[in-house]
Amino acid sequence: MSQGIEFNRLMLDMRSMQMDAMAQPKSVAQAPELGQSSFADMLGQAINKVSDTQQASSQLATAFEIGKSGVDLTDVMVASQKASVSFQALTQVRNKLVQAYQDIMQMPV
Image (cartoon, rainbow, N blue to C red):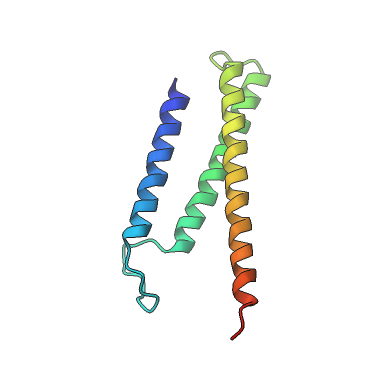
């Protein structure tokens, strides 16, 4: 049950980040103001969150393997799948960024 709530919270966070990104002015020459996060900061935070999810999944699996009480197999499997999905999403974002970079580099000047 808590996994569903956490997934919903993650989706709400993603939607709010999307709305924030869409609401920002489109001016390229404008430098980021203090207190605002840049794309690099947001990407770094996403990478750190994926890493944290993978570490939590690994720790939960290890706790289950050693027989720690209170650790259920379903919790381990859900955490493992969440880590897998978050890593796949991050990989797709990376692929899109690489493709965008290649498209820009192939543009005639």
